[in-house]
Amino acid sequence: MRIVNDDEMTKKIILIAEMYYVHGMSQEEISKRMKMSRPWVSKLLKRAEEIGVVRIEVNSPLSGCVELEDKIKAQYNIENVFVIKSTNAGSMASVGHAAGNYLSSHIQNGDVVGISWGLSVSTAVDYVTPMQVDDVTVVPLVGGAGSKLECQSNVIANNLR
Image 1 (cartoon, helix red, strand yellow):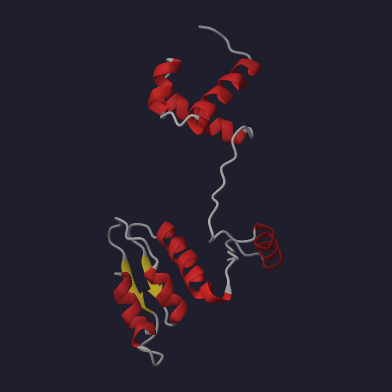
Image 2 (spheres, one colour; image 1 turned 135 degrees about the vertical axis):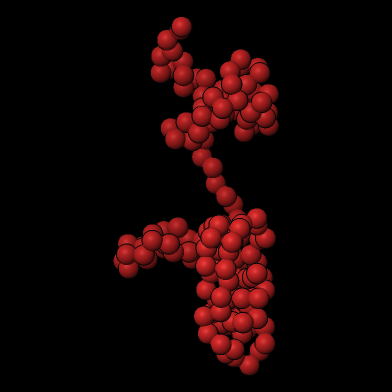
C-alpha cells in the first residue's frame, strides 16, 4: 500500500475536480481513468468542495440577499429566512416560486401540511414540484375565507394534494 502525502492528495483532488467540472467527464469515466471506485471519486469531489477547490453556486433569479437573510436570522433568532429579489411586476410569482421550491424540498413521507388562505399561499402551491412522497395529508387550516375561490384554503389544500 502506498502512503499519499497531502500535496499528492490535493493534486489528485484538483485533477478530479477539473475532469468533472471543467471537462464534463462523468464520475464513472473518471473512476475508470484514475483506476479508483466511483464512490471514491464522489468523496474526492465532496472533499474538493470542503477545502475550497470547488465552490458551487446556484445562480437563480430566485436567489435572495444572503447578507440580509443572515442579519434577520441573527436579530430575530430565526432558523430559515429567505429574501427574494424581484421586480414589482413579478413579485408575487417570485415569492410563490421560492415558497413552492421550499415546500417541495421539505415535504417528507408521513407529513401533515396545513394550508391557510390567500393569493401568496395559492401562488406558492402553484409552484410546488410534484414529487413521490407517501402518506402526506394536506388539511385546510381555516374555512373558505376571501372572495376569490382560488385563494380559499379548501381549494388551495385540494390543489396541493
